[in-house]
Length: 104
Image (cartoon, rainbow, N blue to C red; front, side, top):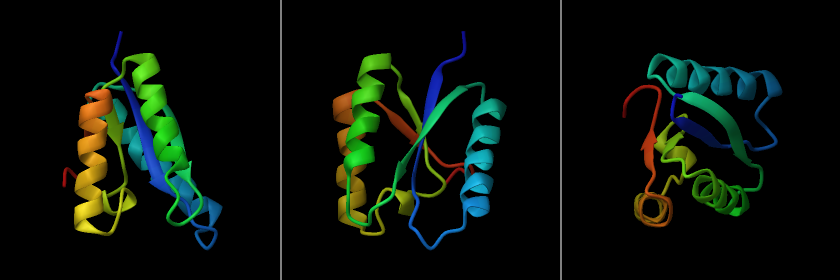
């Protein structure tokens, strides 16, 4: 069985649905190409909220999954220090690694 990977991204109201669909498809293609089973995408709809991020960590722990894909590191946070904190939380709380489709 392929290891699970979960998607996470910010989805502000001003981004058209077709753009969100395109980005999710890109994350799915990455998952398949890298040998993962893409489980689902967690969407953060409200700027500054971390509700979906918390749900992601809970699901990673429940499923004993260790992989997350984001469209870019900016989807975790545009602030370098906060982004580092969130990456550390994923590693510490769920032993998860984070990937981007472009490898950055």
